[in-house]
Length: 282
Ligand SMILES: [Zn+2]
Image (cartoon, rainbow, N blue to C red):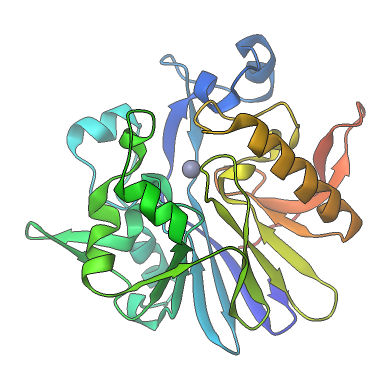
């Protein structure tokens, strides 16, 4: 899709499965299971949607998906159905990893940072070896000092090689990365989570949520993942973002939705936020 000077394309970094209860927080299964189906282990299938943005200042990749470094056991736990990393899927589109100028990650959980490195003959090395990898300084600090509640989400192999290779660009708060594209702090899921706002300069804006609103179902204010470290923080971040998104008619992109990957915001019959105009960013 064209947005002013930018070309925007959604590329999936690989599907996986997560516990439906954990994904919907306090919302009971009798409600969420009417809206999304799960397997016999209570798991729901999710995508790891990444966004390739090509503009006058270069190529920017938002998120890198699951990657392909999982062990057999992890593959089973997360129901990973194939090995197609973002690197592989970009190559199929004719986009080489070393043509990416910036990689922006909303946070460093494995389903967002897994594709930044690959394992070649037992050595884990960066995939996008020319790119600056943009994350919030606080997120990097948290990822490198995990505690019992978030340790399973932060895998060192996804970010330590970037630091070793000098490819990290740590930022503090809101910051323009290339002209028209900025990161904005959206705390809640993690304390230093960021989202990406693209402005084409002609009044058209696109927001990549990250895990503040992982799927279109999570537009409903009480639908907040149990993974989030600060649930009320997520609620306040969502409230603010969605009010602005409706007022300024932002195009919204969801990182984990397998069906409704992007669209414009409206309200359903009950007055809850919902995507009323889906958009295909392929
Ligand atoms: Zn995620």
